[in-house]
Structure formats: structure tokens, C-alpha cells
Image (cartoon, rainbow, N blue to C red; front, side, top):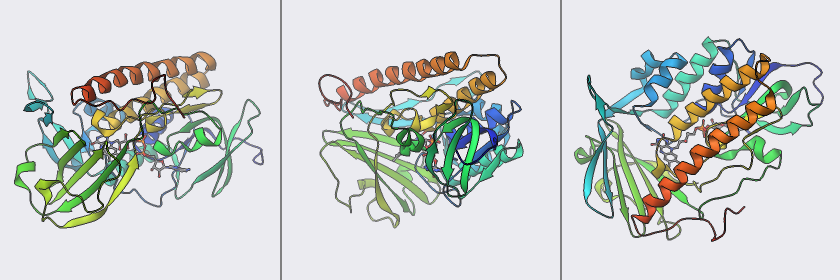
Length: 349
Ligand SMILES: Cc1cc2nc3c(=O)[nH]c(=O)nc-3n(C[C@H](O)[C@H](O)[C@H](O)COP(=O)(O)OP(=O)(O)OC[C@H]3O[C@@H](n4cnc5c(N)ncnc54)[C@H](O)[C@@H]3O)c2cc1C
């Protein structure tokens, strides 16, 4: 390891919602945190629809009162047409009234969380890509970055589906589904039928998600069970609207690494567990896992929890939640008459 000192208590790699939440949770526990993000500035990315359950978490992170500044639209639920009847699934409500979900502009949402991280003392280095991991001496854990080597007492892999540290450490990350690719794109203009709430529509060949991100901007996602889609494919309701960004495809196969915490590192967000977007709540899960990892790392570094126990508790918590989601997704797809599970026996690489 080239660096001889500790650069931070915790190095968080990745500045999405998972990484920012972990960084804020660690910094507010008095830890010195350094967050490394490879992109120069926050980028637009899918994941704009947030469940109302995100609200109390964002308040705990200290940005609850700023959320409205990045919200493009609100909606009381989702239209679902899933092999049966088309129905409206409301988020629920309480004595105050019905709950509303959020459509956020992701670049601004991610920037909001990172601004909060900086406010609580997190040192943010960007653009700064992690390119390798250094052998650990048991007390210090290091990464190689585009800005040189850095060391800390704990590493957090929050690199999303890239799982950069997980891969660099050679950790197994089995798939629990067949290969699933979500294609997504954006159109402009006006589509009044989509302005009240997003819609999820399943058919024999896949499913389509359509949503208004903000007035004048609509997003669609198509997951096809039968291989790649036509690059010019477009949901019927958006036909004729101006295409704002080219269609992209992302591997969203269900995956969870064999260990999500161990010996000086934690994985959070999509790096810890990925499901396809029909499961919804990816951002909510990323924030929750970031906050949970931050809480446990705080306890370990304060000497109030043994590291091995904290790592095991975190792994079990993620695994339990992933298994529950897997069961839910299996039933969800069975209702459509399809199975997207990995091979007959178990998970595969
Ligand atoms: C098509 C699609 C639609 C979706 N729709 C929704 C939705 O409506 N609602 C929802 O809640 N979720 C949705 N999701 C899921 C959601 O986008 C993710 O769950 C969420 O973004 C995960 O957050 P994260 O912080 O774990 O990772 P990310 O948001 O992926 O952030 C990871 C960060 O790590 C950085 N990084 C990667 N490698 C390195 C490296 N080597 N060095 C430094 N930095 C690195 C990246 O630049 C990135 O900023 C959708 C996903 C897809 C693909």
C-alpha cells in the first residue's frame, strides 16, 4: 500500500443515492468521510419515480425540506395492467390525506444528496474513479484511484450495478434471474393520458413502464422477455413525440453478491442487491441500505460493535430483504404467466 497514513475513516465509492446516504450517515456520526465519484457532474439517469416512503428517510438525512426543489410531479399511485384488469394501485394514506409519490429529476436529486453530504463535512472528490483495491493490512483498506491511492478504516462500495470494489476483490455475484435487459428512453411534448400517474403494463413478451418526469418530459422503460428490442421501439402512447435521448439498454438481472459486508467493507444500494425496475423502490432501497451501513460502520469504528457481528447482521438484513423481494417478484411474474428465474437448481454466475 503506497499511502502510509489514513486519508479518512471511511471511503465511499460512488455518489448515487446509496453512496450519498452512507456518507451522510457516517459523517453525522462524527467520522471523517471521503466520497469518490467518477463522473464530473451529476447525470440524468432512470430512477425518477419515488415511493412516498422515501420522505421520512430524506428528513433523517436532513434534506426532507428541500425535496420539493427537485420534484417534477406528484402522483397518488400507479396504473397497473398486469395480465388481468387495468387497475389503479394507490400508495395509501393517513388521517391527513392520500400519500403521493414523487417524480424527481435524478441529476438534481443526486446533487441534492451530495450537497448535503458536503454540508456535514464529507470530502467529495469528483471526477475520481476507483481503478483498483490495495491489499489490506487488516487495519487499513485502500483503493487505487485516478487521483492516486487512498486509505481508510472502512470502504463502502456504492457503485451501483458496476459493483466496482466487489469485482476488484473477485467476489462472486450470482444471478437469480435469467438475463434481463431494461431499455429506456425519453420523449418531450405532451401526453395527457400519462400526466396523472405512471403506468406499468405487462404482456406476453415483457412489460412497459411510462411516466411523466415533469411537464414536457416523459420516460419509458421496456423489459422484453424475448431478446433485444427494435432500437426504434416506442410505447404506443408516446408515438409521434420528439425523442430527447437515444434508447439505452441496462442489464437489470437479479443479483446479490455472496457477501455484502466483510472485513473492512460494506456494499450498499444496487451494489448490494439488484432487481429489475418492476420491483420498484430501487432508490428507496439504496437510501435505506446506505443509512443502515452508515449506522453499523459508526458503531464499529466507535468500538461499540464487533466488526464481524456488524458485517454479519448487515449481510443477513440485506439477504432477508432480497429473498422477500425475490419471492414477491416470482409471484408477480407468475401472474403474467412467465418465469424469469435463473437455472432450475439455484443462482448462477
Ligand atoms: C431503466 C431503469 C428504471 C428505473 N426506475 C426506477 C424508479 O422509477 N424508481 C426507483 O426507485 N428506482 C428505479 N430504478 C433503479 C434505480 O435507478 C437504482 O436502484 C438506483 O439508482 C441505485 O442507486 P445506487 O446509489 O445504488 O447506484 P447508482 O445510482 O447507480 O450510483 C452509482 C454511482 O457510482 C459511480 N461509480 C461507478 N463506478 C465507479 C468507480 N469505479 N469509481 C467511482 N465512482 C463510480 C457512478 O458514476 C454512479 O454515480 C431504475 C433502474 C433502471 C435501470
